[in-house]
Image (cartoon, rainbow, N blue to C red; front, side):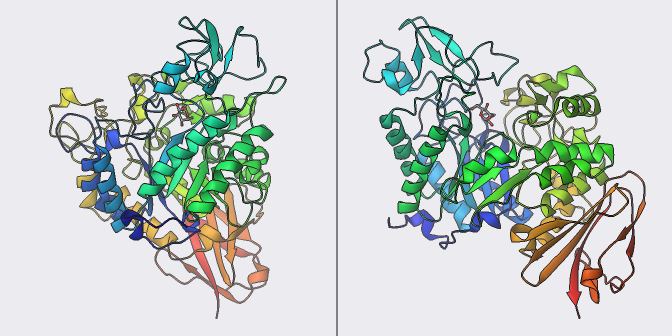
Length: 554
Ligand code: GLC
């Protein structure tokens, strides 16, 4: 085993840490600017680590912070082993890592392994000529006819997955923007190079990688070029190397696929440790809009069991559009109708909005959705700013409207920077409902009743029991469909979760006979409810209200 670096020494080896984690996703650029140049940086982030720790998060997931022309906000990497000078230096990153670990915060970084920027030296060399030794690090063709069954992902910008290179006079393959050429994973040099990149960050002490866009690593004629066995073989190769040298680090797969296809990314527990549950997310929004539990129950019932050491990553919003790829056409129409009042809110196959505006700023629905996030099976991910109910700006282009500066205070720059507001990398949200004067950390820190304070309590309550992070889940099926109730169990511990998805109060009768004799204790306040008997257990649940009950046998 490698010797732990001084950075990692701060955290004990805990191979399943990701199962119990609460992940906070943020962009260094958007979080806090320490040097008044209008752009967030690592030194600024260090100053805000206490905030993240106090919120109750246990891990951070950082968007790409590498040198990049920033034509896809850093997902177009020009150098994998350095830091974008706008965000600081490698030493700043190391200091950040040490400081995060000192606060027991694990750090997950982005590894964009499907493609590079066209500015990466690998691609610049590869396109020099058709005979360049670097040529076969990318995928080339004389025609744009190959792999026609592969869909286009960025439907609003791209017409084809092939782009013509006028320099070397061939087409190159790209699944995303045309300035993001796909690496050629059939080439073992590429696989080795990517492992070297991983090693670089693992040596430094990074705890895990979000593996960006993993379904698309390998192309084969006659297939849709997604989830191919050859792609899984690449991931298993990387995992084997990881386990040999760094046993407590983690791979999180970004595979926007149906659960049955995502299952393959866990393999037999020898591929990725975690994977996002993409289809669940839009169905939470659907269920709350329809006031019916069906979408959530259905998708969970279609979610296969995963190996013991693996875990789903679940989320409400992230840095991308709210993707509607994993829903039926009918469901997509419904989501567009229900959640986009302005066509500018749509992007590609999704909706570019943040959580609070999607829910009309309705505090009750925001709480309910967060309650679901924290009690359904999986590790929850909170997108920066959603804990204070930040808004968005749909007029900023692409997905920039959900990546605006974190709102720390009510000042002109939202307390994000000491620079002039004009200098900021992006204007803060300025509309009447969500501008920094209305929504900011500072004011919410002064009230026990703010969304921020409430979110902290919710996280604290979740951490009372590992039943949420590791337990099994079973749905109850009360006649009232507006109520979503489930039981989470782990060993002797049982928690009953009851959610009212409706805007008005509901009564529900739950069949809890198998818990006869147990006394439900409401977890947020400790109130004791009547003992469970033979008869259906009657509860009333207010508008969008939810309860978590510990069932104790006394
Ligand atoms: C992933 C990222 C997205 C990026 C794309 C291409 O889907 O989440 O932000 O644009 O990959 O790298």
